[in-house]
Length: 330
Ligand SMILES: NC(=O)c1ccc[n+]([C@@H]2O[C@H](COP(=O)([O-])OP(=O)(O)OC[C@H]3O[C@@H](n4cnc5c(N)ncnc54)[C@H](OP(=O)(O)O)[C@@H]3O)[C@@H](O)[C@H]2O)c1
Image 1 (cartoon, rainbow, N blue to C red):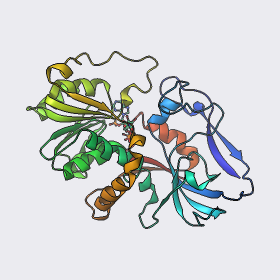
Image 2: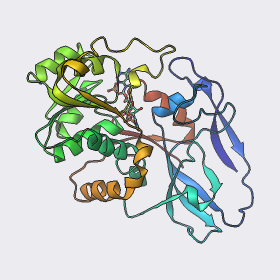
Image 3: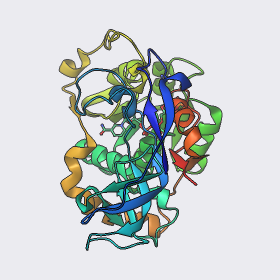
Image 4: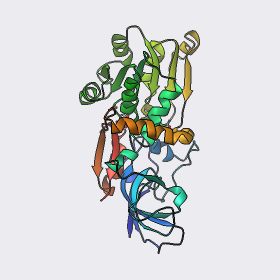
């Protein structure tokens, strides 16, 4: 028997508990060439909000009444395929459930020596790789002044720490004084401010009077507009996310100052992390090395139990997480 979380209805605005339902399924006898996995941790991520709409995007929408999907790390309980054995730790896209059966090609073997295993959903997983690929996309180099919005989240805090390791001056914004303190004291950001205490543009101008070279956008909206105004000539933007708009029913008008792209000859490049999968081992080697040597700090908000998964997901839009939000499954 395995419990799972399904999409009960499509949300309007910020999702609520009523959009999710819990169900149980029988596990079939394990077929030949298949693997049975028990999930240990599952990921909740902002992009899942887009998949809850009935709209075509770069990933198909979740189906009503069906189990949700997402990153998870688990252990092999039983294997009838030569590629895996019981006890192996594996990453998959079969989150939101306790157990699943799949073919070996849907699993990525990871080392149990790295603990906690949830790090494969964060710094050493999808969000860490997003931070790494997003910095590469903007060709971030020593001496750059970089501004990162959503800085205390999973992508943002790793992007900031990696940018510091590259010799940048790093500025971050986040939604509480506790997060600002975390960025300054634990992640080594040079400057951090609370975007809720005053207009982003005013705070950014105060903190970076000579402008910024790079903007790592996790948020869109007001933060993007402030960055466009603050970027120097030939500045670069990595368009990673736009969480401030994910729960909007209709697209909001874009930044009023896009013409800065022309006058300052800016470059703005969009990214989707899955496009970088061919560089996964390079990422794991570099960032894994930083983790091992203690140069990169891991920060997670861990929520306990499958029943809390919907709440953890909703919390991404109210800012209840510092670092990577993960759900521990018992
Ligand atoms: N392009 C890609 O391949 C890719 C891959 C992964 C993630 N992303 C994007 O990267 C961004 C960060 O993702 P993540 O996984 O690291 O999530 P996260 O930052 O760990 O969690 C979301 C955070 O967003 C902030 N937030 C929520 N509503 C906001 C609003 N209206 N305005 C400003 N901030 C708001 C909250 O922090 P505060 O307390 O600071 O508000 C919250 O903690 C998201 O936009 C996500 O979609 C893109």
